[in-house]
Figure (tube, helix red, strand yellow):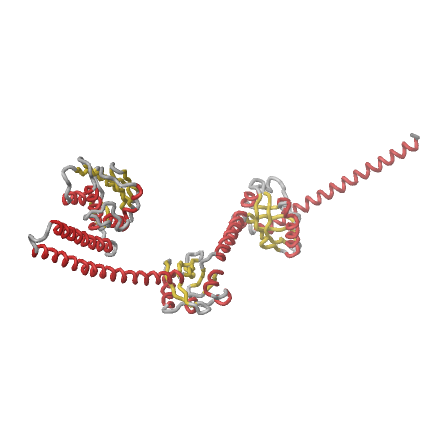
Amino acid sequence: MSKEEVDLLKRALAREKASRKAAEAILESKSAELYETTQQLKKLVKEKTSELKGVFENIVDAYVVMDLWGNVLKMNDAAIQLLGYDNRKSDFNLLQLADVSEAENVMNGFENLVSEGSLTNFQVKINTKHNGQKLVHINASIILDDNNKPIAAQGIVRDITLEDKYRRAAEAEKQKYSSIIANMNLGLVEVNTDDEIQMINQSFSEMSGYTESEIIGKKGGDIFPIDGGSNIIKIENSKRKTGESNSYELKVKTKQGNIRHWLISGAPNYDLSGNVIGSIGIHLDITDLKRLQLQKENLLSELEKSNDELQEYAHIVSHDLKSPLRSIDALICWIKEDNKGKLDEVSLQNFDHIATTLEKMEQLISDVLEYSSIGSDDAKKVEVDTDILINELIGMLYVPDHIRINIKNKLPVLRGDKTKLHQLFQNLISNAIKFIDKPAGEIIINVKSRGDYYEFSISDNGIGIEKQFHDKIFKIFHSLNKTKESTGIGLSIVKKIVDLHQGKIWLESQPQVGTTFFFTLKK
């Protein structure tokens, strides 16, 4: 390098050094000026907010003062607790706390604050130092100097994170229940204390024939009820005002003029202060049910009348049938008496056969009458001690010496028709006695508890019944042993009595070994 080049380089370095010193001096001067301006600004802000010091420092919400660039100049304890930062310990910028997704929203809000002088109902997500992300609500205003020049901004920052969460949850619930209300098959109506309709759902619109726009604001009691229904509405509205909830029926006329029956479940509607502001009614159209109920009542009435007539007819027929039988029996006795010593042995046997047949015929008529009467009367159910009943029954029945009746355990007390229960046990025990063919006969009576029922059993070691006849023996007129004592109705009567007491009857049997009849009676 030549001497001229070296000199040129030295002069250039000297000029650069001089320029750097000049720049440092300017920077130092500007920094001092900026510091002085900031101090003056803080002093001015302090003066402007000193009169509000006692107010803002003690309020529950966060209070923040910042310069026009977002640097925090002043904050109360609530702000420190919310944000996690303390400007008394270190400087920080409030705008930089905003979530990155809120950048455009923050800039627009800040520009509006500066240009308009205030900002209300502004919401933004911020990232706090310790408490995570928060949604805050801000109301802010500009602070002016003595020349009405903006120098700073102050604002109230309220944490609405939970409030927003609850609001969104409530809105979701509202949408869910609104959808349910709109689509449920029950009519929903909301009225005020003057019975003016405030809201209906689609189902009620379909039930009544009126659209929402046609019915809102009108009194339900003036539109729908007939046959004194308006008075019912007035009475029910007075009940709602006292906080009472209940259900009632109403006969109404729809827009199309159709007569319907509604079942209404009404309840008072309250405001947030607990005051009754009206009522809410759930409406169910029960017209078809009422029609069926009326048909049922008519059928029951007709059936009751038919049963009464049938019962009366059965007694008349029984009397009319028995009268000629008794007459025939009397004539036979007279013939035998008038021809005493003249009739041969065969004729006397034939007359005995006729008498036996007449006796069986009369027993058959009595059994049919008894069978038809079971369930026709409405005897009052009473507490029946089956232990006492059966022991009394055994004392009344003829039990041969070779047969022993064994009651295994204490028999229960139950509610029922005492006379019919007496018939039930008498038939089954008599049958057991009748069909025991062993030299040493035994009848065992037992009972077990089965939930809501008692399960009784009556066992014998008699002739038994073949399995093919187990279902048939409970049918009327079906008898396996054709004797003069048997009419084939006894077990039919037993089954009918068990049915009357809401029970079931069945049997287990083995020919030449014995039979056990099981039946249940409701406790």
